[in-house]
Amino acid sequence: MKVNRDEFDYAKDKNQIERYIKDKEVVRGKGYTCIGCGQEMIAKKSDLELKRHHFAVDVVNKGKCTFSNETYRHKIAKDILQILKKIKVPPLFKFPPSDYNGQPNKLRDSEFIEAHTVEIQMQFYETKEGKICWGRDKNFEEDKTKFNLFEPDVSFLVVLNK
Image (tube, rainbow, N blue to C red; front, top):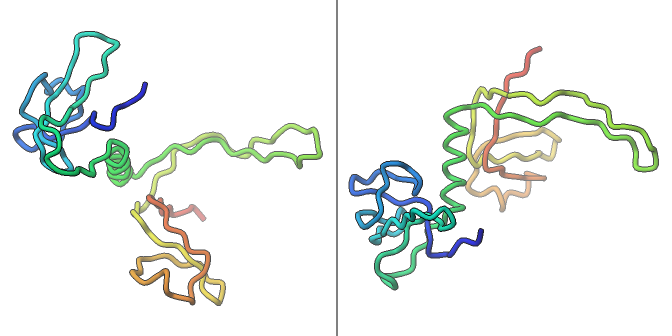
């Protein structure tokens, strides 16, 4: 289903509570504002199943808004992962070399992993001495003593059983 750029799944109600368009508390009509720019929005809910429910900006061209459904869902997912500190990982397989016709070997079943700590935007890098480190550094891009830097959106730090 194609989504119009002016159709949103989330908005704030009159009490400034963030609402999803399919929440039972959301009623058709005015009384909502954009989470990104605060513009007035209308909840457009239809009785027809083929019509997509959405919030729409009430008055067009009041200014540019940078709110994005995808970015907002991304933020919600990161928040949920920090609260739950748990994620389900898929099974792990070892596949034979490409020139071999063998079957893949299952090394582990799918499982839930519980994190000791969940960090957002944590930087990981290797020092000149080969030590793997992590942390937050505002100047990491300019620091020539750190190599192979990456910064995942969410990092699960797990204490392994010895």
